[in-house]
Image (cartoon, rainbow, N blue to C red; front, side, top):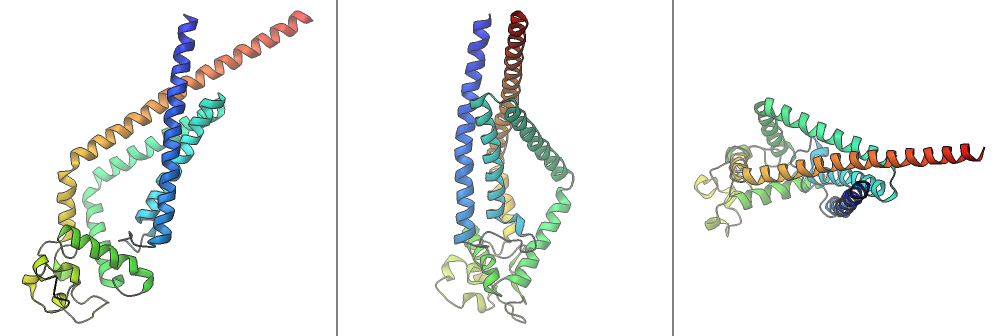
Length: 261
């Protein structure tokens, strides 16, 4: 019975250590990608200039850091049989699960409010920061890329581009709003011919794109939840096993000293 427990403990420890070792490597890679994005494409992926912490490079950096630290604690705790590192891993992952649950509940409860606020922030970015300075060049690149890839124009429609700070008093749009058959014309966005521009807004296109891939998001969410639950259970099993062994060794040491005395 004791031998089977030892084998089970060793198996859990090996799988837990290997899994966290892989996640640790992935976390380091994610941090590297975030640093590369920040250096090479500074601001490129920030559509919300009022909230720079929500730019893609910042989000990727924070996610990679959490993965790196959590996996390091788990891998080190399993390798060195450290109850302190294992319980630290358990607390960190539990807090992460709690934060994800709270964010999910709040997002569901206030989804309409969040949607309205997000659309307003995107509109503000277009009206006040698009093509205005080098500091906000990333917003210009990001909007041009999104509109070209999704075949859309503006947040709600092409009128979102009228009279913005970059061209006050003009009813024009960026060249990326032009439909493919007119993109060969350099001034197609300045001709005020709405038939040359994409009629749909990008916010609606992103919603459609997201709904079409909702099943994939669900699968990814389920996989992440499974990995986190597996990590919590495994770390607690290893923690209890480590404490039990430490207590047994202490008991043997005390017993030996008593026998000598």
